[in-house]
Length: 216
Length: 202
Image: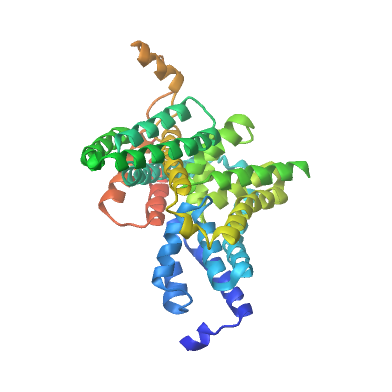
C-alpha cells in the first residue's frame, strides 16, 4: 500500500495536494501553525511523501519567508511533492474553503454590524477572547525574539512609532536596514572580544520584566 | 477594473511585508482600510477579525476575502486573495531551494532580525488596537495620554471607559491559555457564549 502511494503518478499527487490542503484549511480553525499536526499526519504518516526532518525544515522556512504561514506551507510542501504545479494545487486547495466561507458570511451579514443584542454580545465575547489570545501570543513571541537590551529598546521604539500613527509599512521597511546594521555591529563586537555572552542572561530577565509590564 | 488592480497590489504589499504570522497584519490593515481609505470602521474590522478567528482558514486569507468583498464584491475578494498569495507563490517557486543555503548569510540574518523585531512591536500594537475594542469601550486615546509626559492629568474623551464583560472574558481566556492546553476554537466558542450570556446583564 505504501509503495503504491509513494509511486503515485504526478497527476494523482497534484490531486492529493489540492484535496489535502482543501481539507486542512476547511477543518482547522486558526490557520498558520495550527495546521502543522494535520499536515504531519497526512503527508508524513499516512502518505509518506515527506520525512519528519523535511517537514521541520519546511516549518522553519515558512516562518522565515514573508507571507501568511498557511500559504507558505502550502507552497513549500506542494513544491517539494509536486513541483510548481503541485505548489499551485496546494495553494488553491488551501484558499478555496476560507474564500467560500467568508464570501457567504460577507453576503449574509452586510458590513457585520449586528443590531441584535445577543448577537452583539457574541461579537463582544469573541473580540475579548481574541484580545487575550493575541496578548498571550505576543508575549510568547516577545520572549522568543527579544534577547538583548538593544533589541528590547528597538521593539519599544517601533511600538511607540506605531502608536504615533507612523504607517506600519514604513516601520517594517525601516526595520530592515536597522536589522542589517545591528547584526553587523553584533558580529563585529563578538569578533573583537568573547565578552558578548556575559550580558545575555541579564538582557533576558530585563526583556521578561518589560514583557510583563506590557502585558498589563 | 481599476479598483481590482489596486486591491490586488495592496494585498501583494501586505503579503510581502508579512513576517511572523497573521496577527501582525492587523496594524497594516487598520492603517490602510480604517484610517486611510475609511472603507471599514474599527468595530466592523473587529467583528471581521472575530469572524475570521472562528471560521476555518487562516486569518489573513479570511480578512483579505472580506475586505475585498466590501471594496468590490466577488471580484474584489478574488483580487485581494490573489494579491495575498501570488507573491508567496513567486517567492516560493523561485527561492525555495536556495533559501536554506542563504539563511546564515549576513543579509538574510540582518533582514530577519530587523523584521522580527518590527513584527513583535506591531503585534503589541495590534494588542492595543484590540484592547480598544474589548477591554475598553473606545480606541485608546493616545493623544490624551501624551499629557502624562508633561506631568498633567490626561483628559479622557467622553465615553471612554472599561467594559466589564470585555475585561472578564479577556482575563479568563488569558488564564486558560497559560494554564491549560485548550484549543483556540474551544476558547473562542466559550468567549462567544459568555459574551451572549453577559449581554443579558450589561
